[in-house]
Picture (cartoon, rainbow, N blue to C red):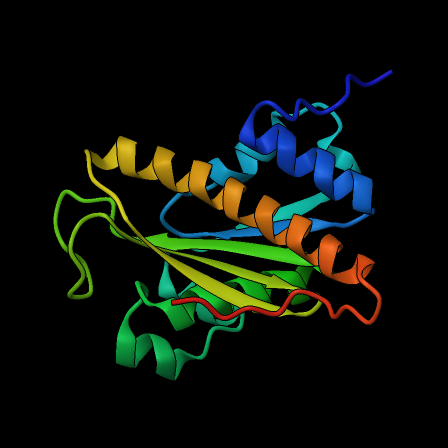
Length: 180
């Protein structure tokens, strides 16, 4: 018997909510390099909702595997809100899941694509739409990556919860937010 997900930790809350709703999840990671997926699979019972991950550290993988338009990457670079949503949509489509979450940003020690250290975008794609959240984080490389994982877990959990509440209202529509 598998231990239940622990809702007192961010990944535990995400897994518990996804399992409760019967939803599947996938991650597309650049900045976090697989740490987000690792946080999810550390939770007992994650196999009931987590399908997999694509670590897309290079722009080639973002374009070829996730379907991020090469023109977008060439024009804006990898640290961009539209790239984040395209990554989330791409992993959702590629792995056939209900929800996709992505991370892209600058952990340092130097700026990248004209963006300062600590600039992070978390993309979400789900049944009713997509969203992107910009984070401005501080600290060293490890601190920025760790904070990004925690925030991505919270943001996706919040989106799943909001989606469930919207669908439970009479005439409610599925979650569909675009945030800057």
